[in-house]
Length: 343
Image 1 (cartoon, helix red, strand yellow):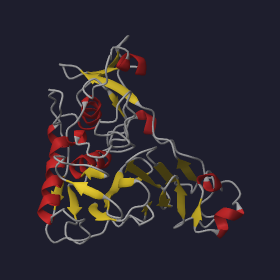
Image 2: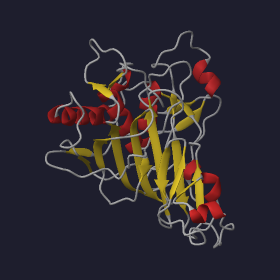
Image 3: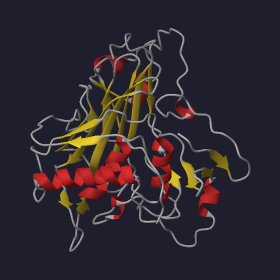
């Protein structure tokens, strides 16, 4: 990356971990060999466990490999040593779920239900990013606008594989044709590649990836219980049933050092009305392109942005019915993708 970070008060270089664009907040410190805590009976006897039952526990002592850690409507299958899995869901209302399960090389399980701290930053004309405090990012706002909401959040890694395989042949919901789904996917990825925004901002980006569609019938490694299952090495996007008010779910598998291994996305077909145009939209219908663009943001390394007064940044944790604002980026969305994939 060729940009600099500076605070509103003083200029300082942000410490970056060399490699996949991982920020220092996600740097992994090697752990000594440890047997972990004693295995609680609940973790040994059940196929699905609570986060508090396995935090700090040895994957071997409890036989945790392959078990499901579940909380707040999402779950992940415990990965192998030296790997992590993150589940992030976009919801129609309420709190969006977040779950990360990692296993150190020493075999100790760590669980987080709290994403990394929110960031605030404004891209300056010279390409630098002006770091802001929450107060600085919101104090001048008289009325909410996505163009002066500088909230963004970074996930642990950057997605680097060249291809996302799109299953546009199975489980398509009513009203969504194969060709429509394919064109929406390409258009939404191009939003991130081009930094397309509704704020008149321009910034050079180097966003990787392409959409491969046609005859693929691969399935995302995501179950009907919103669980990120065992990775198979393919990056897949598809439709399928999800539970609760989850519109879309993104699962990312990566090594403990932050190198992505796989990213899968699923869009809900269980009880959902999708629209591709908000003209005449009413009731519990949701704009597919906005949700697709949001989930691709997760794939590219962005987390949920908790706005200050609105809910229409592309990376908002929730989206209201018939809301199409997420089709293009807001100010914070552009800052986030620039920090991850600045040109």
